[in-house]
Length: 112
Image (tube, rainbow, N blue to C red; front, top):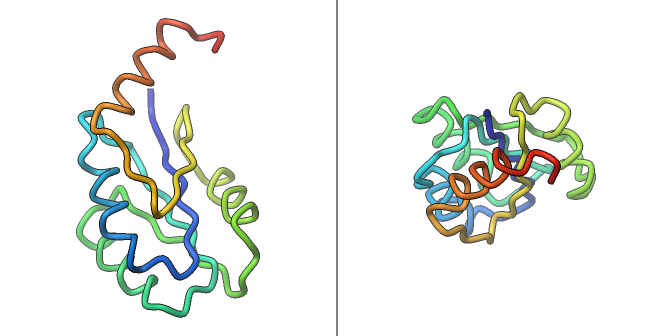
């Protein structure tokens, strides 16, 4: 099963390194991380671009104008390739086995 993470961002450069570290440090890392930037002005784009150059699982999608987090989440969902999608936030901190345990439970209980 493939897992996509959609991570909306608006001026969260201060949170983004730790958010990306937590996502990539999962015992079962996601297949892709789609960071949807909502016209940030705080250096977020440069920061995420640097991470994306180092890790091909990270993709940056940019909005030219601020459209709000729901539009960003929908944009990420539209291009996500995973069988499962997690909507995360820049200030989320995830336990390292969240994805592995969640996908295991979903495999056991596909009706969930």
